[in-house]
Image 1: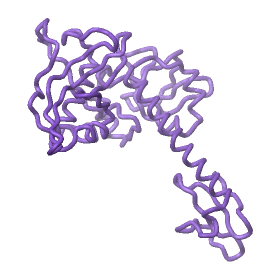
Image 2 (image 1 turned 120 degrees about the horizontal axis):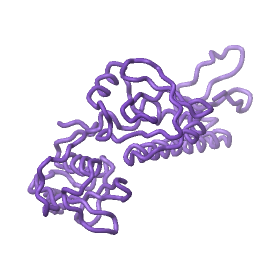
Image 3 (image 1 turned 60 degrees about the vertical axis):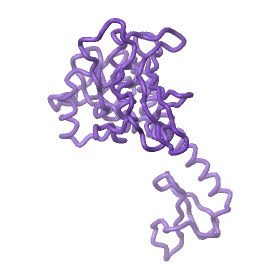
Image 4 (image 1 turned 90 degrees about the horizontal axis):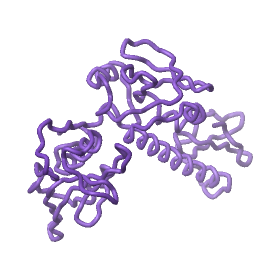
Length: 285
């Protein structure tokens, strides 16, 4: 944004999301000052600019959360909607370089631009920028991406940094052989977490409810919740993990064979993270 005059001696603007000031006049260098002058700290214009910065931060966080929900659900998004929100820097920052699928689910590409008409410009695995004109676009969860390994390698070659974790999100495939009646995974049972589990869960974005840590996904027309039981010793802040299970929200507990690939992967990711085998970047430690 531009610089706004405040009094006779200064101008203010947002620089890297913070209120900055610079001196005006024939001897002013034009560069932002290192600190905000004391005379400006209580100025109404500075306060309004601070409020704008706070709103922009909240807006950017909301955009990231919405796009993350689109990736988690793998639901089609109308390209007309993408065209309307793309000019907004917060939306564009959240969406750019995510893998997108158009009409052909076997032809993924990195999203680079959206035209006013809703056409998508993507970079495909051949390194070519192509134009797609689907009515809807899908931002798939990585377990649903074709050529995932190739896409990860391609993104690394291009030094792509996704704001929403997609390509390098940890994924877990469901074992081919599961007993029909099994409803729990016991691989993590007995694992001790040395620090307070609620704090660790919060760093990964999981919810704690009673003696369970939970995460939800939308899959197969239902909201499915993975729940990991734990017991906690409040005297020394240690927690011991229990069984992992899945259920339809406000519905039945699922047999393991019934759990979809996204719900399975996210539940295993949650349990692995809480057991300490996953770092904050979604990589196995």
